[in-house]
Length: 281
Image (cartoon, rainbow, N blue to C red):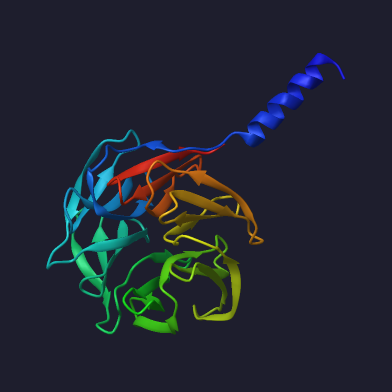
């Protein structure tokens, strides 16, 4: 083997073994320890809840400049964030059992749906047809619910008495719904039917330790899961195989989003009160 082949092999092995690590996207403690729900708008801005104080939503530009976007009314505190059509932002308001709708242009805030029987709407997922799904944990009892949410019918209970439902995501093709249970450390997958209901529940993956929190799909079909307490983001293939874990600076990642080109992921970290970023290779 000539020297060029040796060099190529060395570089290939080095790139495979290189460890992805995070850097700070925002300064520490610009958010509270309730930081959650990151989501990326069409212009690449990152939104997350509880900027400077509880009950707010912060906006961070692609270059890392952070400011308050809105303050939520009536004692509302946000959790998961997703975007719908045009300038439509959805926010899970866990204190008032609401899904809030915010116009990105006017910043007008209204109640999209509400249900007093929900424990605390937590993380959100949105299907290609704009149907919302929400996890709904009861931390005291280590149980949780799963909801489908539309403007026409509001909250529709899909499953009750699960484990502590938390991270939730819809596959890119809109065919499957993924839900994790934090305390039980399990990820479940369902088939999504034409009417938005779910069927064929299957166990997708089980972790041996630490907690689970928010999760998102990358553009290549891998599922990125925040490992609360471990300080990593686990990456699972579409077949449910562990691909790698990404080391973070903080220990308590709560949720994750991607840049629009999927070259960077942004992770909200509760124990540091900031957003960390990972440049993906």
